[in-house]
Length: 344
Image 1 (tube, rainbow, N blue to C red):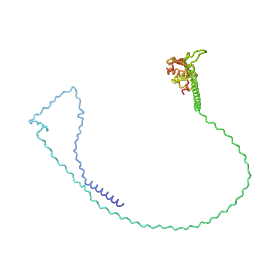
Image 2: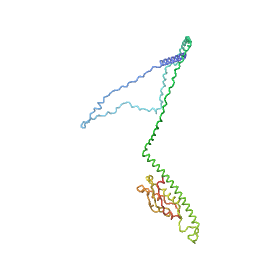
Image 3: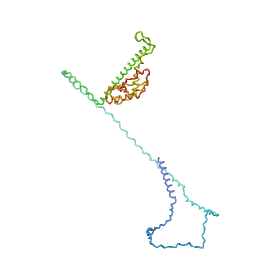
Image 4: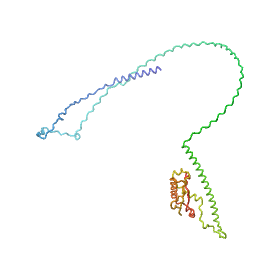
């Protein structure tokens, strides 16, 4: 450890000595003399204080100097580029040789011998503690038992049964807000309305199925042919005197086509029991003849009138309707009921 510190110190000292010697041998700075330029201050008063001449002043004519006549003729300068003699090339001046510098490193100084390590002092052994003899435990005196008192008989006291606590009536629930009550009432009405609508649809489907069955039976009986009264002649399978009947399912399909284009006002959806009944006249091509007649509005007022007008526009917008031409007498005039509950 000490040898490394010594070597490091010696090397640092050698580097510092080399640096000092190299700085001492550097060339001295030779400042160049700069020629001073004389500056002369000329007042401008003689130029700025020139007086302005007047128009009435006398004009003085001065003679211009004539050309000077000399006996020596003027020499003409010849351009250097057109001369036949070559120009004398300047001689190269030798560059000044730099002063020799001694870059040799100084001889290293011999390292100093390391200092002798100190001898460790002998450590005296610590004295061992003397063993302590355990002392004998003192005898423990046994406690004398205390006399036990005999329990005295206490009179038995019969306790009367405590009265049962009266039941506390449950606290009434916090009153719900008016908005929550209205929401619950609307939900109950909506559920009841949906139940009624489902029951009505099931009943209508059942009635349409029964009507279809009855019409099929009637058509079969009429197609077989029969006698009208006693002694009548049999028919050849055609119905005479009566037109083809429009089935219940065909009537329901026609009403569904008319309701497809119906867009009632939003206020009509909140009215309970609002219905509009129209009587629609149709042409043979299925187009609407004129304006449908409003037969009944269950609720009067602006909401009812707006709902009826929307139903009339829906009937005209959805036409013409695709219907069987042979049953025109049955569907030429159709009674349709519009109920906003069907759109919910």
